[in-house]
Length: 269
Ligand code: 5RP
Image 1 (cartoon, rainbow, N blue to C red):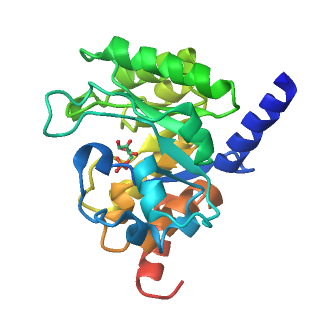
Image 2: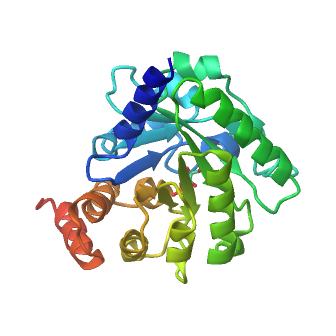
């Protein structure tokens, strides 16, 4: 029995993390706490030109069921934590909102949930992570922990992020998503025994900033990104995702990615 479960886990991880060991996840889960986020009002439309360039899509069961063609051949990372919103009391007060039966029924390749280390709800979110890992491991489904900072974006510094990532991995997450930080990001990755992917955060002023931090994060050991707003909220989402994909899978520098971005934008690539 155990042998088959191992195969399932390995197979799902191989769908997410490509043969080169790298991954580009495209999240469209923001509505679960933000409502109809700008440019994500109709998630099915938003991802239509983009999904082919992603290795996996991340979303809730509601968006999956209602907005995504079941024939789509992309692995899905299902967001299964929630029950707090931007207008509520505390974003960290999340719980698990999707059963293991539903995860299996909807054929998720992985699941994701936020952990709010250092918040009032730290214990609750970490206990939920442990529970989810126990349930999902039984069926060979990898859990990706999302190290969330809530509204406190200033928490994006290496010491804090390293602690969050390590704790999430110790509890059993198979992949950890974290923010990039300009200083000592390698300490975040080096202290985490499972693959780390970088989240994008709010849209940056320029596209180049994204290419720079993705490139630097990859040089420092991240295996890829889970990056949403800095793709689909930009003026040229296809050019953005293709350039980011080139950094991740084709070893482009930020400069080269900018070149590709300009070419795609101009319809020349
Ligand atoms: C939202 C998430 C997102 O998946 C994550 O933040 C990545 O998206 P973005 O690049 O827009 O920050 O977990 O809850």
